[in-house]
Image 1 (tube, rainbow, N blue to C red):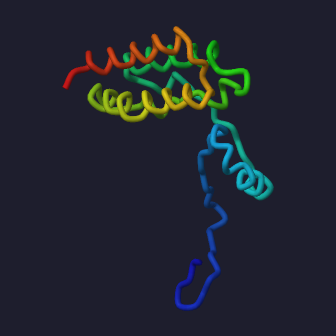
Image 2 (image 1 turned 135 degrees about the horizontal axis):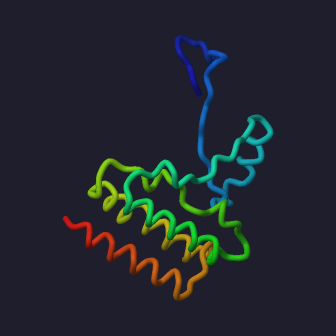
Length: 139
């Protein structure tokens, strides 16, 4: 509980907006989502390749978008589970390598295990392609 000198009331300025993200894939917190949606307005912000400046990152992002359009399981909508552009915004290729290795690749593999992405030749190829790209970027 929030408490400062016995006071538990929180006062926010009227011009404060709280921005959060939510993924549809985590169904274990569905009831919390319902409660939050009853109390707050939500605006979908879809991925936008135009904000990605690194050419290698943009190419990977576009490949990933296409893969999600064609290989998302029938239980999900591609726009609800596809990785967003924030994974592909970075200052240099070393940061790209880190994001691919420790963020993009693990979550993509998790999507396959959880069934959000179909396990097939296309997704297997993309994993190989990501690993090759990570190696090519270098140490």
